[in-house]
Length: 123
Image (tube, rainbow, N blue to C red; front, top):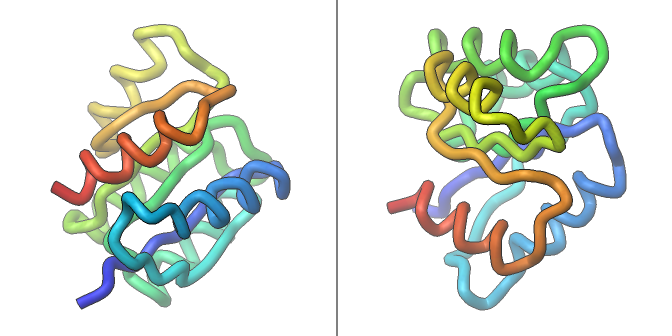
């Protein structure tokens, strides 16, 4: 079964970049089931599509990434969440992990960092 991915970031540039990188030959086929620019939209899409993987920004309008992670993790504990954020201090990363995230990469990221993080999340 093809893993499903939801991309959550308030930047369309980042959403498009992550989607493009999901075509990388090092990754297995990924089915992008939705993209959201805020936490409220992400929560609705997660409930609808039940993605197996989620990339999640932390700083977004309407509902921030930390609250969104906590709510999605509570409803879809099988979903693997990778935080992709410019907030790079250790406490922020630890809070996100405690709330249900499974990994953390810092913006700006390079292609190899994202591909490696997604591969790690899938294993």
